[in-house]
Image (cartoon, rainbow, N blue to C red):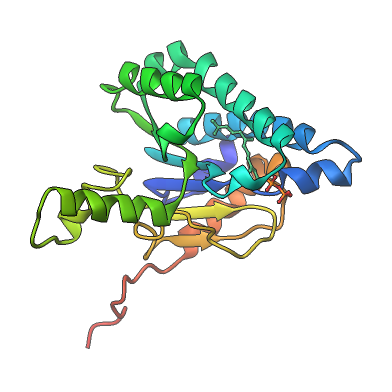
Length: 237
Ligand code: FPP
């Protein structure tokens, strides 16, 4: 982790769109699920690194509301990986003071995964050192439409950005500073459309299972060089 000490600016909220598992497997003549297995193992390593780096907020886009259209065997296999990830680290999250949130439509998930998600969120709700979000059955458009419908239900006549954000899954979270989508796909795919208007995006060609420590460093170095102006101009006039 020594190379990382050269970095001067780190994002407060980093997001990973972990793409390319299937192609990683295909390139090696392996079944797609082997790619997802390798993707999960890699995710665990990367999450460990961002924790050591003390990046406060991390979000991982693991399953979109559109991913249900994949073959049943792959969807079932992915659900098993979620079961694993939502069960195995519970004590460690508490020890490390990590607050976990599952962002997405929990009602659309198998009952045991919904229950594991609610349990983990409840168990870690008072943790404040790190905030780790798993986006599962997540869709940005649905998130916005849910917010609008709940606002209508509450009969609000006027909303501003602050109020609207309270109706999103990401309530109380800072907007993403830096979003990394691996595998060379240049799309945002319904990921946090409301929250990402001023996020910095980075699209490395590497498939997610191969995205390692050096790639994370390169990505963070790119982030450090970005000139975030939020619509303003740099020089004084
Ligand atoms: C994209 O690769 C990856 C996924 C759709 C799912 C990845 C999920 C995991 C590894 C489990 C993570 C678990 C938690 C709880 C965060 P792809 O299949 O679209 O790759 P391809 O575009 O190369 O086919």
